[in-house]
Image (cartoon, rainbow, N blue to C red; front, side, top):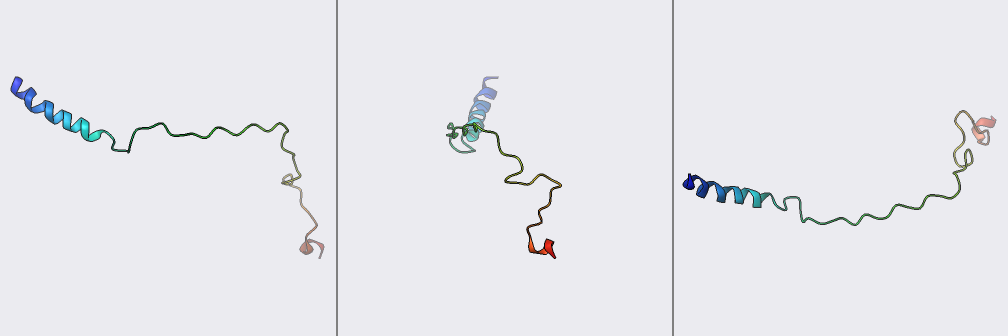
Length: 63
């Protein structure tokens, strides 16, 4: 029984140590803080027209 432990313990330790740091060093990543929430709601229809609405300002539409 002791002979089995003397053989398996070093093998188990080598396997455990081989698994340490496989994915690189262990550290806590620096996560940037979340941006502040806007105080005013986003305007609707000024930057992106509402779907279904078409513009007639293009030269191809006037022909």
